[in-house]
Each structure stands twice: as C-alpha cells, then as structure tokens.
Image (tube, rainbow, N blue to C red; front, side, top):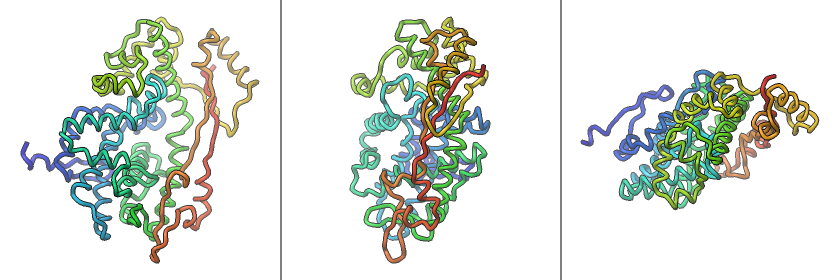
Length: 409
C-alpha cells in the first residue's frame, strides 16, 4: 500500500474529520482484531432505555485517538518534548485500550469467563499484534503498562482525566441524548500541561474540570447505572450464567463456535497463556454471537433459560427497586414467595429471578490518582482542594446503593 493511501479521513459525528497521523495506526484499524469492535456496542443494553445509544467500541476508540493527537499538539506547544516515536506509541496505546472488550461490554466478565478483565485481554491482543507487527508496538505496550519513563504519557491513556473518559462522556451523552454529560473537550485539552512529569490542568481550566466531574456523576446515575439499564444488564448476565451452568452439565445448547468454546469450558487468564489459539477464538466473539444464541434459547426445554431469554428479547425486564441500604430478609422472602408461586419455580431457579446487589458511584477518587491544578506561581493542588465549590468534595465521596430485581408479577 502506498503512503498516500494511508492518509485516511474518518468522519465522526462528534468531532468532524479525524485524520490519521501515523501509517501503523491505519494498519491496526484495518486488522480484524480491531474491526471486531464495530460489532460490540459501547453501552451494552443501554439502547433499551435510550434508543439512540447504539454506538460501538470502534467509534469510541477512534475518538480517543483523535483526542490524544490534539493533546500531544497542546503539550508540545507548551515546551514539553514528545518525540514522534512517543506520539506514535501513546496514540497506539489509546487506540487499542479497549480492544479486549467482550460482547455487550462488561456482561462477559461477570458470566462466562473466570476472573478475566477486559484490560488483561486488551494486553494479550496488543502483545499478539506486536508479534504480527514485528515489535512496532514495543513502546505502546510500555506506556500502556505504565513502564515508560515519562509517566504523563501513561496518564493520558489511563487516569481520572484521560482521553478515554473525556471521549466516552461526550460520546455517550451525544448518542443517549442525555445532555448533562456533555463536556467541553476542546477546553479541557487546551488547558493540559505537564509539571514534574505529571499531567496537570492549568488554573484557567478549573471550572471545566469541575463540570467534567459533575457530568461524570450525572452520567452514572442517568445512563450507566440507570435502574432499567441495571435490570437489563443483570438479566443478560443471568442468561449467560444459566447457559454456562447447563453447558457444564453437558446440556445441548445452540451456540456459535466461539461462544461454545467459552460456555463449555472453564477458561481463565492462564488458559490464554496455555493455549495461544484461544485469543483468536475470543476475537470471533461479539454481540451477534450472544443475541443469535439468545433468540434460539427462547425455545430451549430448560424453563429458566427460555424464560430469561424471552424476557430480554421482548424487553419484559425485571422490576427493580433501589435504596441506600440492603433490602431486609422479610421483604426479600415475601417477593421470593410471590414470584416462586406465580412462575412455578424451584428453589434452585429462584436466584436467577430474584436477587439483590450493590452499585457504587464514585465520580472522583483522590486516593486513586489526582487531577492536578497548576497555578501560575507553579504550585500544584488537587482539584478537591483547588475547587472553590463545595460540590467537588461531595463528589469525591462514593455513594453506594442497593438494588433488588424480580419479575413483574
């Protein structure tokens, strides 16, 4: 392929034209591992609540890369050195940061694979791509693993004000139609600076950071932890758990070859090390595998599996209650008995239909890493101390709630 052909332009609904600054970026985008992200929704089942939320991990990955390119330009303009090799490495790291996501984003992590996070699978994919590209991802992997000498490059990929968060808030707000999540990406990135190898926001950008943190809190309650979204996603998790339980008992289930591998076997992170071909099988797994199987399972002889699948396909979701404390045993028993009688379920089937769990909304966690505000006199303060509004201190306190799901009877 000639160099000219690699100067591609993507038309993004959020940012307009996105250009590719490095030849290897287009090669990575064209690789089947990355193209798979077109078939994985960014927000799982959120479209059952917000019908427009049908954008994909592919959209998001391109957006983060675009923001990274802008951030590099800004930081260079303020006198900090980022070499071309480093610019390429950090752009690759952010482009591939989500490449290990399973179908419907997080549902797979809680059901049919054991203790594997999408970050770990992303690293496996990046290692594999590095072999295919003969070591050209070495620097990207160092940055991604936080093993490179310039810490601020890692912070651009993974921190509380990284390109990932800035893009997903703006993008998810746009596609869901929830305007409270709209953040001023231009302002945030223009205010970026580096102080003692740490990413910082200049004093003039303090209100944009406050708005970013508030937007994050609101998006969690209104979109990511919306009670109907929770009901839908927990229904999907329970479908996959039931399918896994049946598969491990040698029950015959329709499934695509990729899904079959993960349903009928107990795979963990070590499995990928022991069997190099397993990553390729995982790469064949996307939202289509799951939904095609669920549509067939509606008619499966197992009453629990068929009932759960019909609920999802028909969008007859769980009723859900949310409160600040755990639900007491008396209320749980009362609902359980009603559902058990109405649906004629056994004790063993009940946990699939009546269950409680907790959620946490933590918009800003100063214990994890700081969002530093850089003042004109050179001093650095954490946003929690620098902000002149009480709201940031309040938003730094995690809010935990409990939810109870059960079928509508």
